[in-house]
Image (cartoon, each protein chain N blue to C red):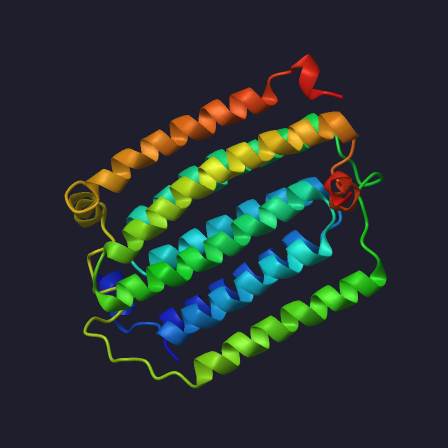
Length: 171
Length: 109
C-alpha cells in the first residue's frame, strides 16, 4: 500500500464520518457545518482525481454560496434544539435498515460488474484542468451553458416571487 | 512533479464507487430519518454530491472531460433548486410556523 492509497482511504473515511454526522447530529446548525466539512472533503477527493476545476467550483458554489443560503434560512427561522422535530424510534430503525439494504444491494451489484481497463491512470490525466474543460464548455456545450443562465433567471424570479409577502397568499 | 508521479500510481475506480454509494445511502438515510425539512433538503444535496463524485471519477477514468461538464451542470441545477426550495420552505414556515415535514399534510385531504 503506497502513500496515495493511504491518503485516499483516510479521506474516504473522513468523508463518510462527516456525512454521517450531518444525519446524526441533533442541532440543525451543526448539521449544516458538518455538511460544509463534507463538501470540502469531497473537493479533496476531486483533487485526488486531478479534477481541479470541479474542486474549486465545488468549494465556491456548494461550500460557499449554497451552504451560506442554508445557514441563513436556518438562522432566519430561529430553530433551536428544543423545537427540532423528532422521528419515532420505529421510523429510525426502519430508515436505517432501508439505507443499509440500499448499500448492500448496490455493492452486491458492483461485485458482479467487470470494469473495462482504462487507458489512463488517475492523476496522469489532464482533462480536469480549467483550460481543457473551458475549451469543451465553450465549444461543444456552449448552448446548454447559455441556457443555464435562463434557468438561473427563472430560479431567481421564482425565489423573489415566493418570498414576497403578499396578503392573499397567507390564509 | 513528485506529486504527479505519486498520483500516477492511481486509485482504483472501485474506491470511488464504494465511497459514493455509501455517501448516497447516507443521504437517503437522512431524508428518511430527519423530520426537519431544511435537513431533508441538505441530505438531497449530499446525494447529488455523491452522484457528482461518481460521475467525475468515471469521466477521469474514461479519459474524457464530458462527464465533468455534466457535473458542472448538475451543480448549476442544484444551486437553482436550493434557492427555490428554500424560499418555498420560508413561505411554508410563515404559514404553518413549523418545518416539520410530518405537519405538511394539508394536501392529504
